Amino acid sequence: MLLDGKIVFVTGATGGIGVPLVKLMRARGAHVIAYDRTSQGNLMENIDTTCKTLRENTPDILINLAGINDFNRAEHQNYDALVTLNLLVPMRLCQAVLPAMRARDHGQIVNIGSMVGLIPLPHVTGYAAAKSGLKGFSDALRRELHGTGVMVQHIAPRAVQTSMNSGKAGILNNRTGTTEDSPDNIARRIVDAIERDETDVRIGWPERFFAILHAVLPRMVDKGLRKNAIIGEEILAPKNANTVPRKVTMIAPNQNIGHDTGPQTSARSHNT
Image (cartoon, rainbow, N blue to C red; front, side, top):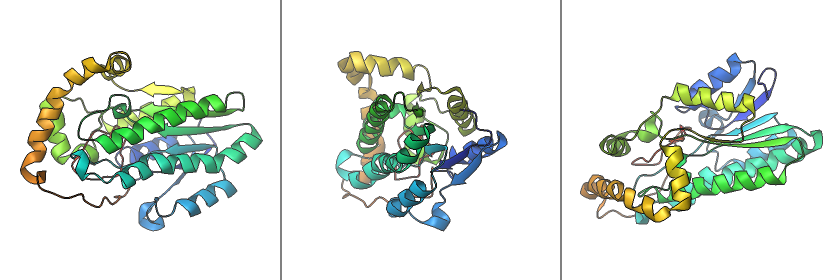
């Protein structure tokens, strides 16, 4: 679907990927409506009113980009917040736009996932679970909507140079040799995927290969990621060995990658 003249609603628009994404879509002629946490409040808390708005004024394209991550031991993560923003919020927004999109026989839903959802990494268990769920939801919904004129796309970036991959997560990426893409390049890839009607986009090599390997031979990937787990423990141990679970709050939208969105030390908005 070409963006020229289309109405696009996007969450996470003020984050690392969101800013260049909105700029590029507007340059290609789209009318972009961005959810702005600063003026509109926490998206998780305002999901009911946001869904009502989308039902009454349904865009041509919905882009679910907002998200948070937490690089920490499993017992210290706030799973409620991680699963809510990364999975339940996109599902609710999809539900809101579907009636009108079905009725007019066209529409586009773009869910920004993460390669972490396809290659689950240690110390980001909540994020990995939510992004894996978003991938499954996107596939199931796309198959359900076949023949309706409504398209569902899932785009999975790898690590991106955003606040989500700063701090301890940045140390992990550096020590493990993880490649981080620029936000501008990821934004451009997302826009191209929208206009080319690509349904399943996985960004990065060798990440695409390891996603296939994980699906076929997960025990081999277990062995390959032991180094990541050891390094992660080394990074986390000094400060977090005796901590208690922390409340996770959403910061103004950020991804994947990590949008992507790779792991990080505390909850951040998803830059994807």
